[in-house]
Length: 355
Image (cartoon, rainbow, N blue to C red; front, side, top):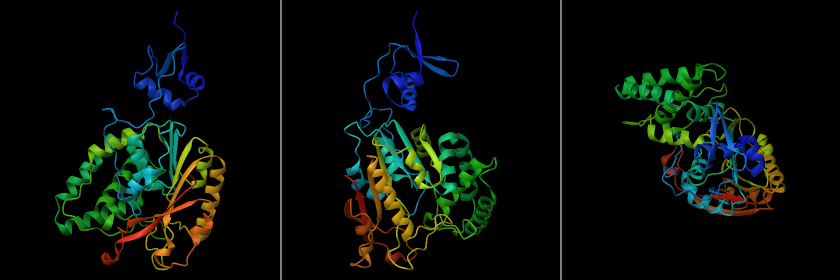
């Protein structure tokens, strides 16, 4: 009689994650695997399937996920530079952590290219992380609500749209994440993100979203295809809302970590954007550098991005000093979000790595 083991037992035997075993079962890559109730059971003599964590080229993973939100400081423009640091080819780095995930351009690039054992994302913005959870766990209802918002909004004239936008903004600010309105809250956030000025997420001192409506003729509020692709890619991803230091328990020598904190303002008046009520000052930038050093000691592969102070003051060595133990590369990036359109253009940003 054929003997079986559980997914947990297989994970321990094969020295891979429980999540990875479940994925192998769902992909029918283990012969004679079966379901007992809602639990996978695996033949006790089954061999660990060949490693398939290299870059995906198969039809199943052909779709590429894109950020489902516009986000100030998004890294889509820097992906070609950042992907040069991806350390997954050798097979030793099997985990990914992004403690300041934001819009997730790097996250979705990696999820679209690699099949990793474990992925961890975090951000202090509770509304943002709620949206990630809803896209992952309840995408059908989310899409239904977004289509309704899109239909209602696009059917109105300019004055009607302004009134509707303000009504949605007020409703968004009135909802609490400890209620049963998480899907609605996520739908309203996506709506506001697609219709507000410059796709900017900004809150006032009371924590209320206060960005005015933008000028878009026919904004795509419900991008169903991408939302479904993103939902698929997020399955099994650990989504956390909290302090970036909480990622320490996840990070180890098998982890690639990308830190994309709130950028240090280039001038005293440049910090016009507040993604949450909390600001990230120089003291906190230094604390992050110390945290990076601790994760470096754990053996993790690390990349940090930030603004280059030398854009405004060639004598400003702030990041050169606090990351003096690591490699610093200056790359060109476009300043896409600025209240003055004439101030948008090419500037230097920093990519800091420990390898």
